[in-house]
Image (tube, rainbow, N blue to C red; front, side, top):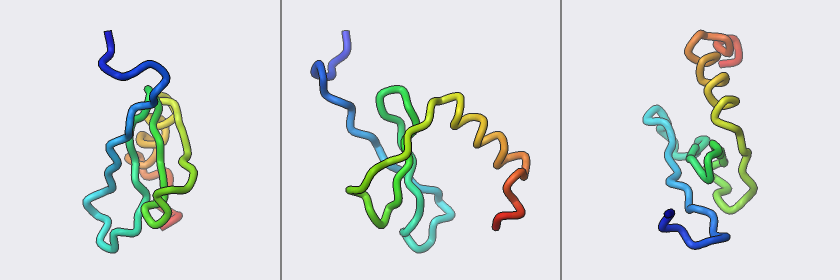
Length: 71
């Protein structure tokens, strides 16, 4: 049995890339089986939610260099 209270969403443990020098970066966390992203400058605003499969597809694309032309 889970130690979480029924109906309460787990609080995400936000983290950002070690490459973030300004402190104003995208933050990522796991929450209720999903991957969530937010803007660290606006932590109280809405988040983007992705399934684990969607997130994995994105990470694979990044690692393969599919977005290198955007930098």
